[in-house]
Length: 156
Image 1 (cartoon, helix red, strand yellow):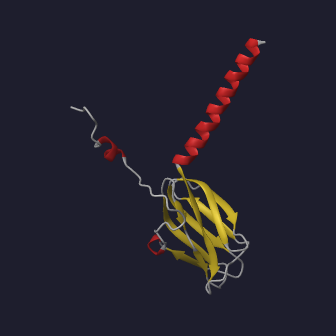
Image 2 (tube, rainbow, N blue to C red; image 1 turned 120 degrees about the vertical axis):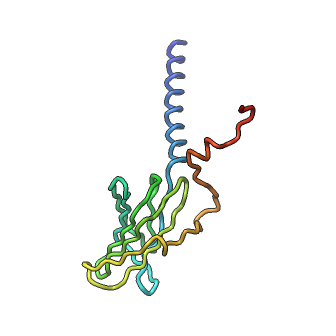
Image 3 (cartoon, one colour; image 1 turned 135 degrees about the horizontal axis):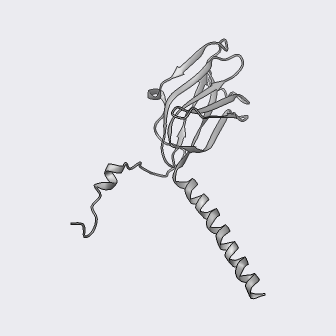
């Protein structure tokens, strides 16, 4: 009977480590991309398609805006992205070169203009709000060279 409890404890520990490592990993190398889809008058555009595409890999995910015109993409890997909003009766709106960094809540608001579906409006990253207003968290990406140059106690 003791052997059975011992193996159950071991199995429980292994499962706990696996779950915690997955949660910890998700906290460090992902971000959230969110925003709202509005028309040219500022009214919310509900139930419309929004696509997030990784420029480097070409992987795209799609969601639908809610009743308030809001959308969110969770667990987004760091990198450069393109956000596309499409709605019937409006031009296709594209926000390019969106830089997503670790732990960020990157806001990309899209304003659709009336027009034919064949027309495309492109918004450059210069026009995207870079101020993070969704959270009070503060973070910074540190590159390899900065890590190597960090002073270490007792380093010769």
